[in-house]
Length: 139
Image (cartoon, rainbow, N blue to C red; front, side, top):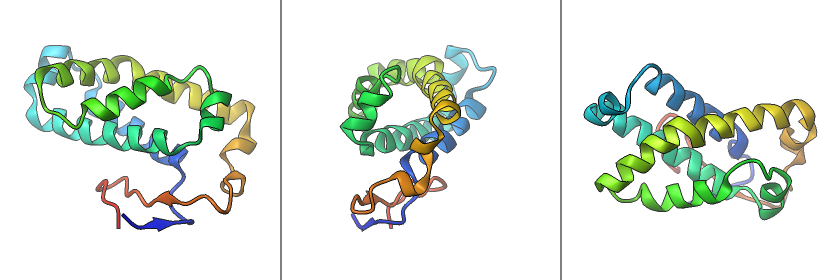
């Protein structure tokens, strides 16, 4: 995996992928979601982008944003590597609660603490893996 200091901000990845999750699943009931192979697969991919980006953020940022369920993102990241039925249930829980709650808190923090979201606020010596929100690919 290549690392770049000019990669997309993890916050931007979380927000873009989270918006995609909400758009993909809008108006769906659990049974409809679980029955839709394509929607479920794309939602899983977007949630994996969100969890990967969430785990790139430092422990200090996690401590500053205590309302966000960082442990939930860690658990989700581990479970989405599998494709069993339990992972599908966790996927639905992420759609209903984890993703929307995270997006809501990021909006609150962006409004109240905009300096945390400035690109120059990220440490210059920290390198993040390049994540493409369109493909999830790491160049």
